[in-house]
Image 1 (cartoon, helix red, strand yellow):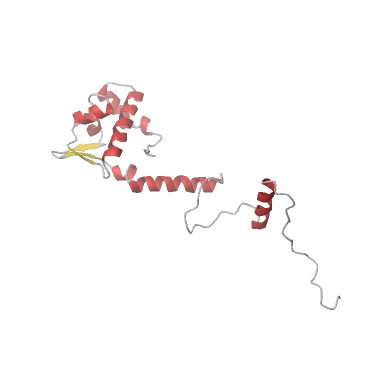
Image 2 (cartoon, rainbow, N blue to C red):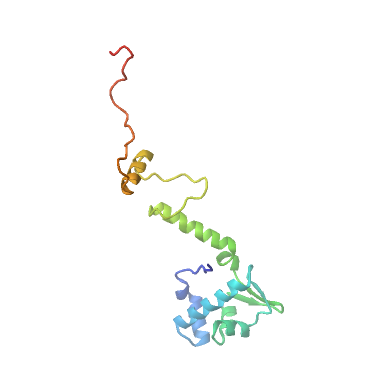
Length: 165
């Protein structure tokens, strides 16, 4: 499954205000154009450089005139005679950026204790307040296992001597 890492505040960034001004569009239209272009770029490049990219190609991919020039104006895209380079691409869209984002989400879930995060190999496990045997008993009980046998609990009585004393 393909996905894009987009910061929550992206639609409200000053750069997006400038794109709106240059393109004469609404915030929603500017963000949708941004999303369409970056979705296409994500499928097209691994490092953020797209050969033969021009402002007109960006306009076509985003579905908005002047969008390619606006991205250059705000510093999100740089053109050369060979094509276009998406600025800071590796920070947000590269394979390592996606891996970092997934790891951060998984670790956040683990810290919050919702039980859906998976610990990376070698990470210490977060205690859940039950011993292993208690968890096993609960699991058996939850599955409706008939006649389950509880693990013996340690006794506080002193051990018996062989001679019965």
